[in-house]
Amino acid sequence: MVMTNRQTFAPQRPAAQVEWRAPADIDSAALAAWSALPVEEANAFAEPWMVRPALEAFSATEGEARIALVRDGDDGRLIGIAPLARTRPGRLPVDACALWTHHNAFLCAAAAAAGEEARFWDALIDALPGSPLAAPMLAAAGIVEGSALHRGLIAAARERGLPLDEQRRTVRAMLATDLPPDAYWDGAVRAKKRKELRRQWARLNEEGTLTTDRLAAGADSAAWIEEFLRLEAAGWKGA
Image (cartoon, rainbow, N blue to C red; front, side, top):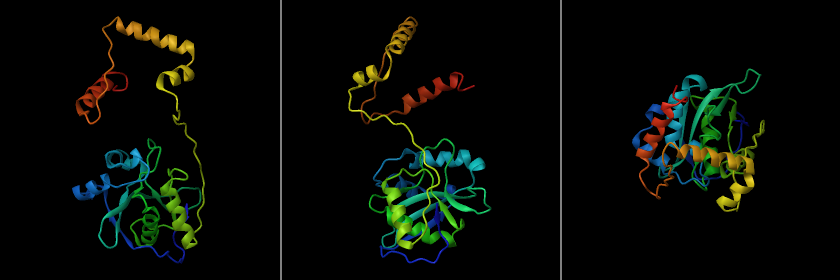
């Protein structure tokens, strides 16, 4: 959480500008620049193919968002993007401008070009007081601690003398191993469970021969995705 309405001194970095758009006004040029944004850490939840359908699906429950496009002040290239919305994050009657998110997202939907993270936050913090989402606080949930985006936010806030408060921290599990797949499987899954899975595989083979196919790198996955979605819709999830 960052306070945004104090009189502060901005750092001496090249200027950037913020353009505010409604989600429906993201045109093909902006979409292409967003897709090509050279971020330091990959984040599927900040990709346009993930954010845009989420905005369509959850705006009614999570609040209407505005998209902040942060551009270089000289050449106009996109250096960052963030969906934002007004919210009330706590019990006090104080609004905040927050990174827009929804209950199926594990990470925030903001993204900044590698090396431009601090300048991205510089521009965003400076633009918020006069924006359609003006609020005394900026809430930035879903940022990975220690990431380039997080470090950029810390730098921008500290250089302005703005208080930066961490309110909640979530620890998530992730797969991190140097073992080859078979060795990891044998060590992570108990013997009884592996035996049961082999039994189920054998039973399924009684219904027809089972095969496992892997797409080659760069192969068109559209037909596979459509087949998968038809299968999902035909079962209890579809119902």
